[in-house]
Image (cartoon, rainbow, N blue to C red; front, side, top):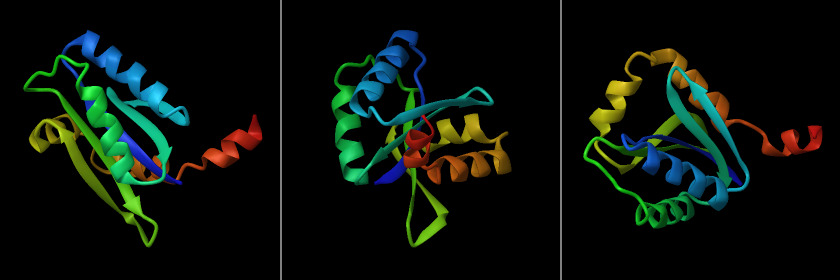
Length: 125
């Protein structure tokens, strides 16, 4: 299993709530995290394509606006320090504007979340 972090923003509170409820149901193994006003949704899945498909299905139920965005962050096992971003919805400049004040903190937060051990969490329960 691999970790993926979804960062999202919906201007419509209703769409934001529907999106969050949908991804929580779709990915039962998850962690919600809010830092610096940014919503992070950590999930565990096998492949990025699987995550993409499931998120695309959720978009059908949303009122999407021009300034909404959804991005998936991930890294490969062979190079965990190289964090990749896949924009699922919206333009990269929208998310860059929201994240520009995060800088090093954002990188550290993403790294920590992508390395999060869901198995260890389960064992501690």
